[in-house]
Length: 297
Ligand SMILES: [Zn+2]
Image (tube, rainbow, N blue to C red):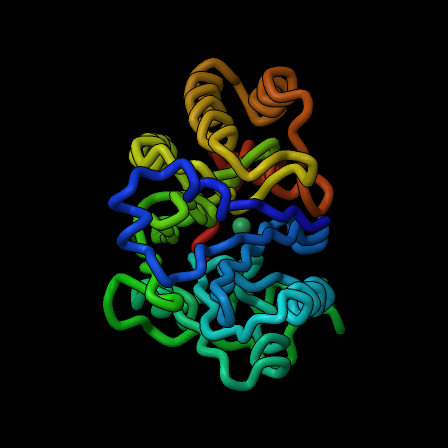
């Protein structure tokens, strides 16, 4: 499902100095593709200028990557850059489809994220390729390390935030000040169980602090890393993520085992969804209760 955001309208409410500063520039617009459950309902955002565009993340499956190619082609823009937010395969695995479709594109990430991906790529291929079969990448690879903390799109600055603790220890996000838009990667979820598979109490609490920092940006457009498909790209993901983390930390204290923890979370968030069966809530609750080792990849 594709949601179109009229980000340009926001500029009409902006104070005069901002309008003057952006004179002659095409305001950026944003389109978000909700990937399938097979790609864990990850969100892929296309940030568009007049003629060029930047994509935030690449899907897990080849099928969803082809859908993203369709979104880019329909936009009529030239895809200049793909920014990968973090080292989880549902945010970069099928990026070869983008390289094949758009040979001039550069796929980039923070240097720490690039190092993470090269380290864990063999483990990820071992774990996921048998399950994905032909829907998985044929030539799994990693992005190129970015030099500096910004990506420019037709004169508009896109600022890289992080790395900080999210569902991965080195999560990054992209912020577009000209349209007050936050592309949060897996620092934010909305209406979906959150991944605590690489976390102890301390890391979950640190993630909560990162959510508070992002909330302070007061962004108008907020694209979460994962959403229930019917939810909007707005501040509701900040509230959901904050409340979910706070509840989980409390429930971890009260629950005797993963079955109890899971039941408490399901009761508190009855409309939240999972992906790949009960992959997220099942693993997260067992790992939080010490019944399964933390993932190292
Ligand atoms: Zn993810």
